[in-house]
Image 1 (tube, helix red, strand yellow):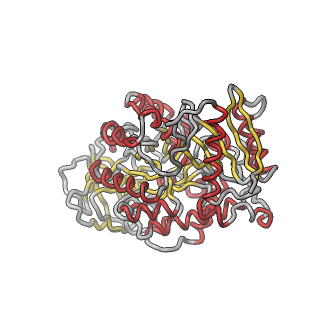
Image 2 (cartoon, rainbow, N blue to C red):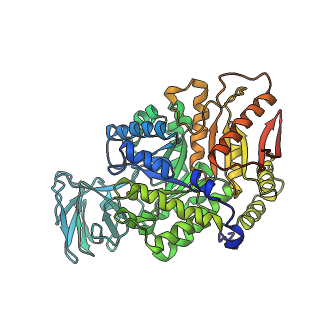
Image 3 (cartoon, helix red, strand yellow):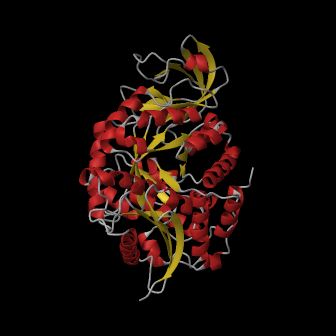
Length: 540
């Protein structure tokens, strides 16, 4: 396997890459996914999150019903309109998640060395002696000596709201465990995770299917986060399910890798999925701590070479309760960028954390600093070598556009695309400058109606909906920033059309502070049946 380690560029030489004016509009090239919840669902807070750099909003259906999440989404729409910041929507499924059910919601105190029974009898009241669970077959799946983790949304294993259990014996359907650390469980639901044991639960549950076919269809979700993906077949089944749901046939499926089983089948899962989410909370429980870094680097490298977005979770857990991350967390975020992450996913930090906006802002600043010292030259050479020869036509154009942009020190790359594939391939080569992805509907056009304005489907003609999917789905790809072209007034010719759109795209870049007078810009577009890369130098 190729090494995934990327050396740092010499910092002095790289400091000029992101000027302050660019940083103000593009907080970072690396994207930020924010989970919306109790502390981040008001219009005011969501607006601040968007301004701070959140480009994808995640709705976690492990808790909260469709009505609750719909209210939050309506607030997101309002925030998008007021801030003029485009934002994609990600639905996160529950999947094969085992849970402890605490109907009374009373705190449960567990003492080290005492015993507690896990039972599928959900009629029982949760207490320090017995914990009802939502899975009838646990006793058949585990054996004496296995370890079980029970905790809330936040999995660090260090806080006093999580407990480790060791299986002492299995009696019928009940599992008797010895408590390894004292803890207090508070709330109505706790996740239960069994280390390195196959749990025979479907990846896409009936509840997930119901949510997707109602809430997901109604809101035309951009991304489906497929929790507990363990095999490529999980992704294929999810894709088949989405294909029957109208617009959702365009929804991108991100396989969420949460356990050793998913890592074992990683290569085949990556082939099927549109992107990968490395759920380090659960992986950190399933893997020995000393192995986590290796699997992270290996998985990110494979995603990069495949040109598929890689998303990393659990980077600044301490910011759930604190205004500043730890030194280790700040370094972890930077290393995620240097390892090749497209996006950072914030969970508890924004869902129920005290500082959701500050967390997004802090992570964005760390990402921007790491991007300055990312060794693009070495990365580019590795990618070209990995792809090999002969390259596909589109891959050749994409890599040539990036090479040209770096050689002439272009301020941006502008890519005309209808499916988004060309723009994503350019981003695969990690150019040091932003890529403005001009999404052109599949009919001739000469006008850019809106850019970053956050229009939603119900406000657009049918022929623009597909383009809006493409535009929003680039919001999780490192370095890609979408602009949507609107074909209200068809041009007489493709040439005039492209020139008109290019002018508006350039004006947009100038207004954003990423393009200045005398800058060079690389443009990648189709002319007739040919793909063309051209370099232009701007006048005053």
